[in-house]
Length: 149
Image 1 (cartoon, rainbow, N blue to C red):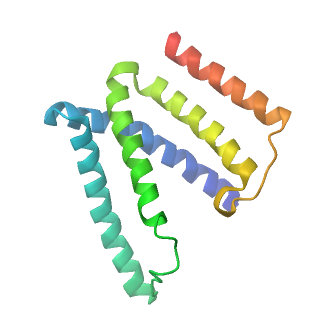
Image 2 (cartoon, rainbow, N blue to C red; image 1 turned 135 degrees about the vertical axis):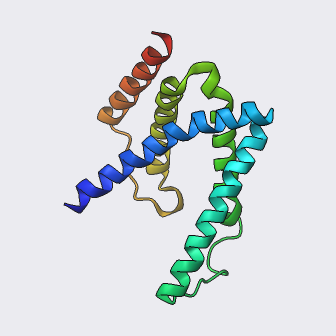
C-alpha cells in the first residue's frame, strides 16, 4: 500500500516540476532576467521550508546536529537546484514544457544510473544491466520524438 502512495507522490512531484518551469519562465519574462526568477523561486521556497522546518522541530522536539553533515552538503544541493531552475526557466519558452520534461527525465535517469553504479553517498550499488541501458535508450528516443515531432 505505502509503495503505491510513494509512487503517486513521486508522480505528483514530477507534475510540480512541469508546472514550475512555465511559472518561472513567466516570472523571468516579467523581471527580464532568468537568474533573478530562479533566485526568487529559491528564496520563496527557502522561506516556506524554513517555516515548516522550525515548526516540525518545535512540535516534535527534534534537535538538529549541525556538525554531522559534511560542510559541502549544505551548499551542493542548492547550487545544483539553482542551475536546474535557471536552465529550466531559460529552456521552457525555447523548447516547450513537454520536451524539457522529457529531457529532464532522461538526464535524471542517466545520472541516476551512474549514481547507483558508483554507490555515490551511500546509495545502494546497482549494476548497469542490459535492461537499464535499453530503458535509457528508449527514454532518450522518446525525448527526441517529443522534441522533434
